[in-house]
Length: 473
Image (cartoon, rainbow, N blue to C red; front, side):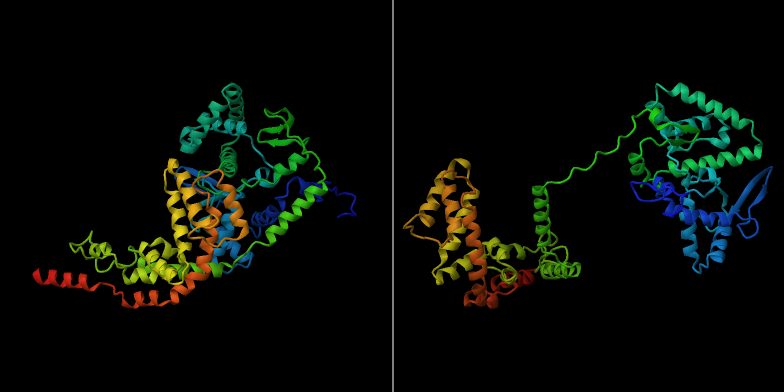
């Protein structure tokens, strides 16, 4: 192609000029070749005129004829595949049902008609709303029994009439002129032309909820590169520069990036490369494991034990909750994560006992003091900040905690302007220290193991209450 003198190339896209103007031709050309074979007299789809009661339906064929032709000539064995292929061709408007607005193929006796090549999508149609207004207005002037507007078309006509209020008189005049031309045609030709024009608008202004094959429009990007092109209108050629909107201007040449911009771009890409990625299978496996682990604690999935007091008259569950001794479920949950220990008051109490045995209880006491600070009113915050500093961080503090230099410096700077989050860095450091060091030893300690083994699902006192209640009933 590059050596041929008859083919011109687009300097922008590097494609032959016709293809650069309309890139969708790569998709449409195979469909159009198939439709041309369908229209051949000898081996094509049988087109006939069907006689009805006091009427004739010219140039039609059935959906079953299309399915049979596709399976025979394209070597398709699966009928569903042939139906799918035929529906794709119908969605682009190459043939259409004569009595419906929905462009789809049915494997039955529904009548279809071929679209004239003048209305094929490869002709680069970009119909304007004004063209659509002329068409709808012309429909209202025709035979109402045959050309009555559908509900969505009537709504579109009302919106267009409001949008083109100043030009509506011109639109009516143009629609009357088109209707006058249509009246001069023969009856059969007029019937075929009206159905083909309706199918054209069913492609470009489809029924709400149907697939719009013109929605992803590659032509607009090409037209922006070539603003002097003319655009086809349904009722004649219309210069794009004479339309209601100004012609699009070509984008300015891209500015060459500086060295600093390139360096920042490289740093950004390197940062993205260092992001931790995880396979979907691993994520799904983790989610399944989490769901199975917490299923026992979900009241929607697992019934509460001994019973739900809101559904029964048994208050045993409330008696267990009011007891200060943790249940076996609570104790097992402490082993799931360190956060489960901190979120449970009973877990904090047992963990504090363990830290006291290791002479490091000041870590949890500092964490609890900072949590309490976040819940204090603003007027009490400075006083509590000073108290926490003197107790845990000041030189010679009674319960001094072990902080790294960075966290200590940040906290010392925050003391100058006390707020609820003055000790955020120090609290995070202590939290990580307890989680990585003390929590593992706590799970292996006799304090946790004894509680885990001695706790029963229902305490003995509560069990005796249940027995007495059942005996009395």
